[in-house]
Image (cartoon, rainbow, N blue to C red):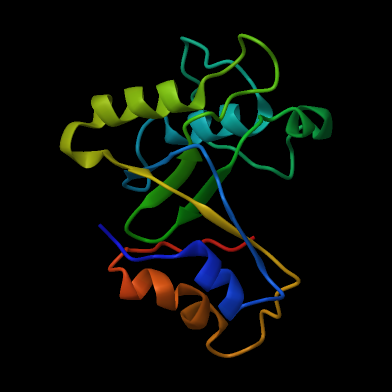
Length: 162
């Protein structure tokens, strides 16, 4: 059992509010260029149902997406990051498209992991804490101070900032 105490963490940073989320999260990881990944991301961000026919152009460009579809792009939390080695998608287990029956991001990501075999990876479930500020992002060491109680409790951390 860990000795992490939320109240102690709040006391160490009194101007910040630490909010635990009740849902769990999964991290999906794929090599760049994974077949179907570009269209899947486009479908997630535009609440577009996945079509059974694949497009010859497997890309998504937020600059050319319809603004109204982006507004309807889903309820829940999702983050996409890319490096030269992988594309990572962190998504909450309750993430769904805003339009009923339109698109289930978790089911589609799970299917892509299965299709990729050892190339696609699903990690989790993970818990999530949100830090609501104001938070001065130019301060040196702020993240390490916020995470000190988790470090002491030997809880691993992935920090995503938006």
